[in-house]
Image: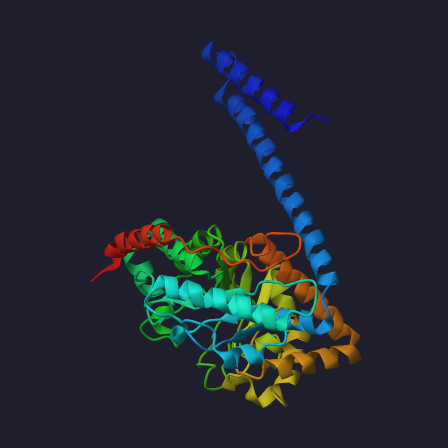
Length: 431
């Protein structure tokens, strides 16, 4: 078997020889192209093998970390919860934590206009929650997440550079410019201590008339797919895991306030989902919406095993599947209580459950108690924890073998550079 170095040397020699022969008329251009393609194939093979090695490493490390977690600690990794405060985590919030959650979502009220203060707040959350919750040898850092779509959904608007709405980005910019814009935003977010963005929205619709309005890029699926892909690519190269949303769409109503559906036959439904394919190939997470898709199931997508299986199988997707907030009105008819609802979502195939209410310790205990009586639910919890840990490894959130929580240092000059870069790109989008 040839080593990669030997293969490359052979290919380079072949290409050189080909060009020599071409210059004296002994070979045509197609033969030269054959040698060039061969070299490219070797390069692609090397990249594939490197990625395969990383996957094996992440899988091994995730398994080792999960082995040391109690059932309750595993369940906690499946929850995204909220905290109060904006400079130091409040004592009230600290009391609520008995286990380290998988993720913490920060809303607009959690952000001040001073980047140092925001960084300090996130660091204080990390330190206090882990100190209060630590009951095992492992202390797994949570994702710190927010919704930075831009425009009307832009949680860090008080502290980071301006971020126009998705519709404005697609109308006035190009995918390349969008990449620069989202890259600058991601640099600032990472410097603040954030590690997950619940964005972009990858749904097709008219921003003037759709339920989601300017949160949509455009009414053209190709355009939506390209801009969503660039947003994800720009953010994830900086260590900000993106949550593509809302799969398979939001339907005809706002699920914050009630039921919504996508009333298409199976073929048309599959066609409508194709806009997600390219962004899903890049995204580390995707949000399953509360919409009902009658051609698949009679219950909301996030609690539908048929729905989540369609997402996994149709798109060969192996990243985190996250629910939208389970306290939203669209799920009320299916909710005996939130323990039952969360168990439905986990059993259906969701890995991360967004729960913005404050009694999440009771939720953790309730799910764990249910799992002790339900072996399939227990297996699903193990699968979900494994997926979440691998994602944290991929973005560098778990940087050492002991999975210890380390707060990053705030480097103001880095933040200012990224802020100024964001301002510079934003000039393109100003009215």
